[in-house]
Image 1 (cartoon, one colour):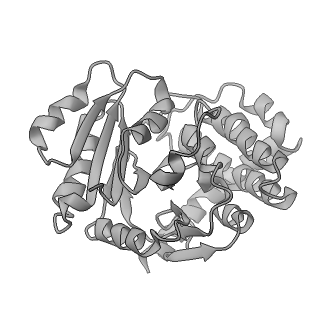
Image 2 (cartoon, one colour):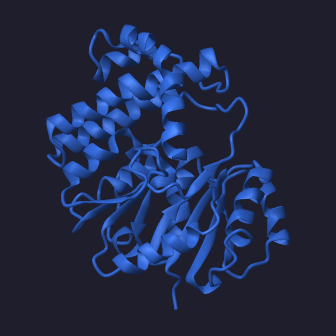
Length: 302
């Protein structure tokens, strides 16, 4: 009998972070029957450092795979190893809160017949509950650029197996897959705060500015060209990237200095999908970032 849920964790090093994530699943949520879910680890680090954890965590529903692939493509390959009814991507540094695994399983059980497209936003939208949508348009409008977040992604295995061969974006392979599900019978955004994130000091490693000025917008543009979302929805998502996400990225890199993502070509790349005034507007919006963070923390703590 297949498990109900596959927690699919792509990994590259960061052994201590993965240890804490596994602890949150197997120890903090140990009231859940192991037969109801599986944990899939796909490791694309040639040193295979994560493998040492397999001696520490010996649960029968934990499975380790070494995968030879580049960077973010691991977010695709980890899904191919899973056998659960619902496949959920899970970032290696993201911790399950106590009781959250049981809540996710209960939601899957209640929706497995209709199989809606479910996305987990962890309170980032300020709704703090599950919200249903009857169209891909309204669902994407509400998600905005958070549709890029790998930790929010889930797909029913039955639907994943039907996708066939598609072009996967090198930085957002999971989003490429997610956007194929535009004909789902219904849609759910679960905005409950189910997880906490372990912060990685000086996080970086790739050009995240290019990712959100070229790569991700190109996926949204293609979604519009295929008539899966409207011009209004597309512009809404691009505006949110310009006014909210990119200012936050600049703030973290240059003001707070807590991230080290490459920003090469940022100003030039903006010209492809954003208006001429975008660069100036984004820098002016940086000043609003700390106030938005404070507001979000207050709202989620109430």
